[in-house]
Image (cartoon, rainbow, N blue to C red; front, side):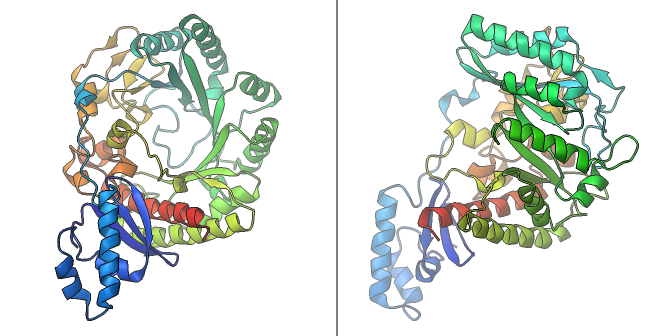
Length: 453
């Protein structure tokens, strides 16, 4: 295809869609334009007419070519490549930290990347001293940045509620002293939610990520408690109480699907039918596991994403819509260049703090000792790692540079790349294929909304 690294075109849900890669502009086109784009490179009008005049009327082709040149003039077709900003090589400011307040958990999820919460060693809880030092660290290293984030994570953070409360109170105190504004988020499996801590979470404006794996039979199998019992009924009851208590806001429900439930559209709909309307389900990432995916699973998963897209659009039209995280991409104003290049900022703008105070590029790197950055008391000791993470982005990765989805996925997850390749420079290929499919579905959804289809 002419200029194939500058555009991406596909057909789905009765729509012919053309994406201009560098501008992230999406064009809804017809079959003629779709075929023209097999040859058109912006400079070869005569060649295009010669190739297609046996199939289409010459006058129609000439009109299409005029319109395509107009799009080029507006920067919406074959837009120029994005360069790495000159400031990008500098050390970034720290904007968010993930606190592993509890390296322990009251569930035994079969696919857990964190060794059922213990990160591969003895179960332990973060102390108040470590939590306080983490807050001090982000304040000291966020420069003039006003907005910062702290995530309470685990394991199960509600296992260590005293430290969650202590850190929250300390953050609110430091906000008054420094003028910074912190967004606090807590990820929970829901088992320990009760009236008291729900009230406290609401009173302190803590955003919540709630873990549920869809249908009861799927959730109960994948997320049993320590005794091997299902937890669905209990956590759904607790989640409903929590969501109702905050008027359906400031939360999202997140699930994981494995090769045992590749019909995951049923899990998404089950969650929606339970009354939760801010949802996400993520493909599990496992190496050499009976629950992981292989290349042969891709057609099944792709077909399921197509099915979910159709159902999603149908429900939107019927007024029974819900927010599905992966179908929500910004095609109008997109993220800034830095965000599009490097994604989450792990290792240079975002750090995870283990219970003992050691810092890692993100929560998934915790316990991978060759990625330990330093600790919250003494700061970053491995000065080269943040530089490596900052310089590892879509334009520096060979496999990403010519990929049409690079500015949507920002090069994929560093931790997954390291898991499968032993370095952060080669993306996890299966993840790439899934990401591209999700992007196509998201573009279909946003295009259908925009044009009222």
